[in-house]
Image (cartoon, rainbow, N blue to C red):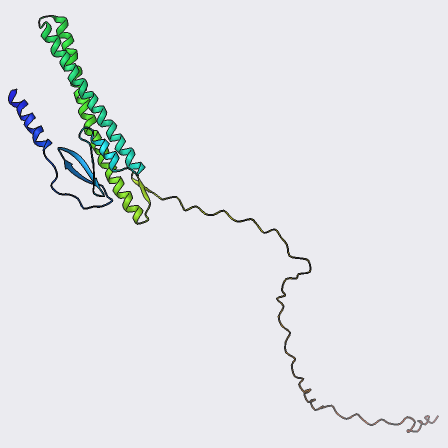
Length: 233
């Protein structure tokens, strides 16, 4: 038992002294590093991080992007909740040990110790689950911040979850007042009539075709013939 506790303490000391040896290039994007044994971030050459709750450093690193800040706060809240349940684990476990140590042979104390020990196990499992579920939200916050930064630079739609949401169109200036004035009555709209045709030169009349009519017959003068004689009886 003592060897296990010593190994855990030695591991904690090593982790506390570990830090990233590479400094990310100065950029508006958020980079993740390991600093003084805990997760930290770098943006524009400035370091963000918290040795107690990593979510606090994440919120500071993605400040300015509401979607990323919401994810970071969700992760920080889960992290705080997990820490509270782990504290409950320590309290209930200490109560169970105290109940057993006060009177190991008393049945009531054994029952109380069993209930406290079961509660400590439940608190520990819940606390670990909350702590583990907090980190995906922290990483999502950093990725959302960097992706939205690239989309804004390329004038692309901002992503919302698993689908892309187009940015709202730019506001359009309201139309000006309508012109309700009318032209005076004397003013007439321009005529679109065609211009008059140029005067055409008079052409000579066509020649008359020759007539093929026959000449009229000579008229016989009336009374030029003798009267007919009556027949003989």
